[in-house]
Length: 300
Image (cartoon, rainbow, N blue to C red; front, top):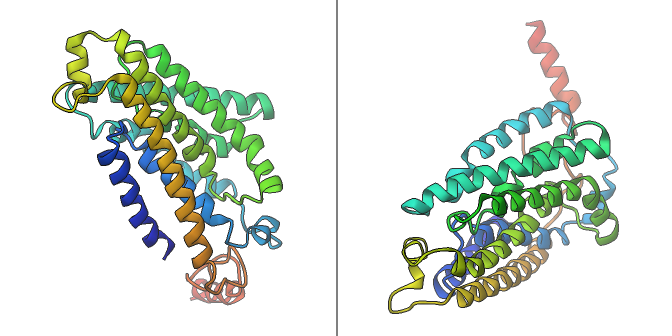
């Protein structure tokens, strides 16, 4: 129910941001990463977070094998993130989006793994699964219009990786203790905060573009800069800033409201226990029955 409701508000926000405000958001930093993360984070406050954080049965944690399986998803995301940011671009901007995303995501990988190694003396799987991808998220809004100097892209990716790694290594537990924010997948430090940084990046990129690009480059890169409804670069940056506020407002308010309403439905007695919905679960009420059936099958 919550996911179905979210789709409606995602569409409303996308129409407002992309068609009414005409924000520049080629890879969805505003409409996808920010909106989805903050909608979910707002909803979590009403799904028994205290009980979830306590986790008496200690089921809300992974192990080496589950993390290795999850790494398959990270590898696919790493490979395809450039096309994710470039799919809506056109012409030479497609090239810019791909190269910028590759540079940014490479820097976020190096910096995030370095931070984990400095803190722990080893690599950390949560950081490798998530923070390595933060450079792709931060390029979600401006990947196709940064063409002046690749150093800016690499700095942005490094910042995203550092912020995300610090979030997973330090801030996630702090948010649990102080804010009672139960973020099982760490979306705040992969999608939410890097998404906000990406949305801010496009504002700076637009203000910087006016003095960097020639008139012919502006006409090719910024189609909204010419024609009947032409905008100045400063005004476009301002509209993108308004888009950040609109996205935050719609995502947090709708997530909190419908999280509260849906949480009124009967909650499961045991959290993080899939036995009521799936067969062959390794733990829970059906464990003994499953193990008994497994032994019987092996004996046959």
